[in-house]
Image (cartoon, rainbow, N blue to C red; front, side, top):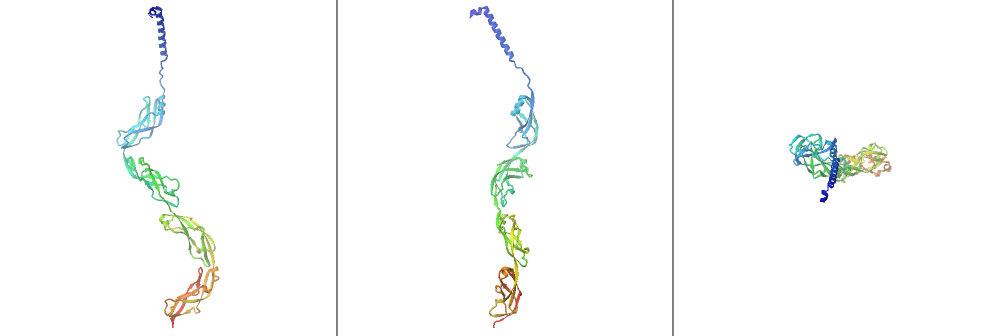
Amino acid sequence: MDKLMDNRWFIKILALLLAILLYSTVSNKENKLTVNVPSQSTSATIKDMPVNVYYDTENLVVSGIPNTVAITIKGPITHVQSTKALKNFEVYVDLTEAKIGKQKVKLKVKDLSDKLKATINPASVTVNVQEKITKEFKVEAEFNASQVEEGYSAGQPVVEPNKVKITGAKSVIDRIAYVKATLEEKSKLKETITREAHVQVLDKDLNKLDAVVAPETVKVTIPIKNNSKTVPISIIKKGTPQDGITIDSIDLDVKEATIIGPEDILKGTENVRVEVDVSKITENTTLNLPVIISNGITKVTPQMVKATVLVKKEEEKTVSGIPLKIQGLSDTYIAEINDPDNKIINLIVNGPSSLVDGLKPEDFNVYIDLSNLDEGSHEVNIHVDGPANINWKPNKATAKITITKNA
């Protein structure tokens, strides 16, 4: 190696190789230099950026902060596009040092790239910082009474628990007029039900108030009672049949009716009725008549019934030669009938021909009652007993008699 280093030509060749290597290295570095080209700027708007609020949540309530805001970001296109897609920054309001009452505060941005500029709309808002309070209220149940099936009634709703704690701003709590649990039931109610219902907090104008309710739902029980009863339909005859007309029968196509009303009224109601004016009936007929209910009954089914009325035209005849008898006279007396002197009564009878045609004097008992009468002359009423379903009129209404002692 020492001999090579002493050789002049070896030294020249080595120097040439080192020069070539150095030139190659410098040339490669120059080819790798980066050219710095300025980036293109752009802007974009995020319309629904959430707003965070920092304050003493245990003791204060804040209102007036929008849920979202629109924010326009401007800067290098790559940063704008990335930030719009990721939303990796925060819009916030800092109320950690805020005082009670209304005040105007600015919306701020943090965690946004320093290469971007942001414009918030709105840039500031008026907020109301209030004391947070909690108060207990009684819950009233509410439901649609029209959902109760016909013939049933709803009792007083039961709410469990019947009180809730409501937390909110003092001004909101002071406005509470109603705390309601509204039962939403679509089907008709004909039996007692229990359902979960959300509690609503309302002011006097039934506007919903922003407050926290604990618990948010309660159980509402609606007791349902059957308020119907089935009773017979009674037939009431009004008026007097015309001369020569007898009402033979009245039949209804429906014998019973269902009535609806308060429980105490139903207990005291044993029937409903239809009224038939027999004074206007001269022949067999069918009438459509309303079913009449007593006060307190709210509905009856059916409301109308058909009444079939059968009549018999009456026949009139005179039954003659009926002896006038004496009844009730003490054994210590004897009585003489002075008028009628023949001691005979005639009866004008009328009724259905089937009954009147065969009537005879012996079918009637015509008498005068002399009970408790003393000696002397008396005028007494004539009494008649006879078959049912016919009418009669004696040719004399009274008799004149003389009572003497029995010798």
